[in-house]
Amino acid sequence: MPELPQTAVTALRLGAAMCGAATALLVFSLTVWAARDISARSRDKLIRVSSVLLVVLVPLVGLIAYLLLRPRETLAERYERELIEEILTREVSAAAIKRAQVEGRAAGRT
Image (cartoon, rainbow, N blue to C red; front, side, top):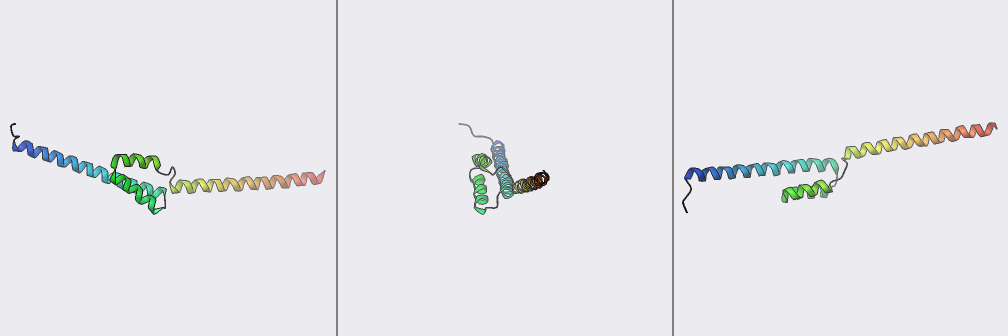
C-alpha cells in the first residue's frame, strides 16, 4: 500500500483537530446552555447537577433526554402564573362577597 505524502497526513491531522475542537466547543456550549436553562427552571441542586452531567456525559442523547424531562415553566413564569391566580381568586371572592351583600340588602327590603 502506498504511503500518503506528508502534506496529506498533516492536512488530515489538522482536519481531525479542527473537528475535535468544534465538537468540544459544541458540547461546552450545550453544557452552558443547559446549566443556565435548568437554573431558571429549578432551585434543587441535585436536579441542576444531574441535568448538567447528563448533557456533558452523553451529549446528544443527554440533551434530548434533558429537553424531554425538564420542567415546563421557568421559575419566573411559575411565579407570574401564581400571582395571576391569586389576583383572580381575590377578585372572584370579593365579587361574591359584594353580590351576597347586595342580595342581603335586597332581601331585607322585601
